[in-house]
Image 1 (cartoon, rainbow, N blue to C red):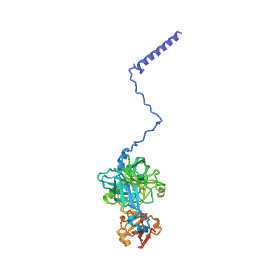
Image 2: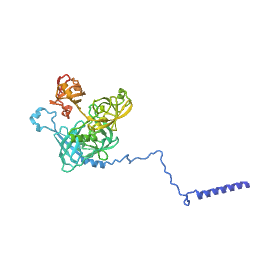
Image 3: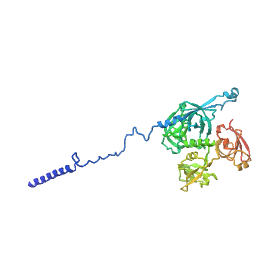
Image 4: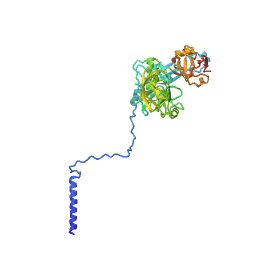
Amino acid sequence: MKSFFKTLSIALLSAFCSIFIYDQFFQTGENSNVQPEQSPTLIPTNYTFNTNGYAAEATDFTSAAEKTVNAVVHVKNTSIADDNLPSIYRYWFGEEDLPERIGTGSGVIVSPDGYIITNYHVIENNSTIEITTNDNKTFEAKVIGTDPDTDIAVLKIKAEEKLPYVYFGNSDATRIGEWVLAVGNPFNLNSTVTAGIISAKSRDLNKRDRKNESYIQTDAAVNRGNSGGALVNTNGELIGINTAISSMTGGYVGYSFAVPSNVARKVFEDIIEYGDVQRGLLGVMGQALDAQLAARFEVDETEGFYITDLEKGLGADLAGLKANDIIKSVDGIKINEFADLSGYLASKRPGEKVSVVFKRDGKENKVSVRLEKINRAIFYYMEVRPLTEEQKKEYDTDHGLYISNMNSRRLYQRGIDNGYVILEVNGKKVDDLSDIKGIDASEVEDLLLLSPSGEKKMLLLQY
């Protein structure tokens, strides 16, 4: 019994001592000399939280809109609607009383002295062009130059004061998913601003027309009248000229397309400096790869430009490129399709050099290629070139354009093929590419051609 009480007493004493020591040295109460540690931060493991009211990036477009709206103008094109008028009408009423046709669009002031960029189709066949600014002032515009291939036209107005204008941005630096604003005059509603994102780049709307199209695609609302207006980034920099929509109804359904600003700027500067557009030629022929073509050419790559042939003596040939090489990038611009290549080269001039990365036998190589002046054009769905002195002697003619690539089914069915020479268009002699510049296929009434055997053929194309 004594042993039990002895053990109990020791246990109680030990417990009391333990509590006393803990209370004096380890407890972090108000009277404790030990400083409390900072409470740990709890991190949720599921990372779920409410995103309402938050954005991935700033979506305040007021600054960009303010920089742009006063530099976008309304373009009114007045022309004579004489396309299908019977001759009896012209006889009785005369040229002065022919009915007028009015078209409208938009334009972008790109310099304080009144230079304006718009679409070629906005001012096509004009007799007069009237510009209305955002402050309701009107001016008569002069056409400085046009480039139907890129659908760009340059106008000039005279104002007493300096005009607000938009700075050019770098369209090559734009990214898919980037916010953009479309500014224009849809349905004659001045200074309309819509917002969207860049949906895609290097879009070719018609891969069969052999035009070097490489549009920026956006989902910013664009309608009739927006053509020629500005596509700007959130800094208010011009990155494109709104040009087209893709629609079954003729109204906006979510797709709009713009000429990249680098192309528009180059065309603008060429027209101002040279009076014409200077285009650089790489000197390669081929196709953009996909899975089907990769299997056909027996290559592992499904992206890039596959070279099938080169033009002798031009930059690519002199730099050492060969048939079966695959161009992967130009100046760091990745080449996935033909529009990537043609779109970038459209912003370059003859004489400039570009860095080309290509694959040969599975290995990547890099060369510098000098661009040469393009000496060919697309006319009536076929590729034509000026005659060389040797060809003029061969065909016994002092003028004409050589057909190097026949893509017109209508002419091919009538026996016209590669090697023929176009001597006259609509009764006028042709000898240079400038002679056919701006002539649309619908405007071609007759062609005088010379066959390789020396036989002349007159084709009537409108009845």
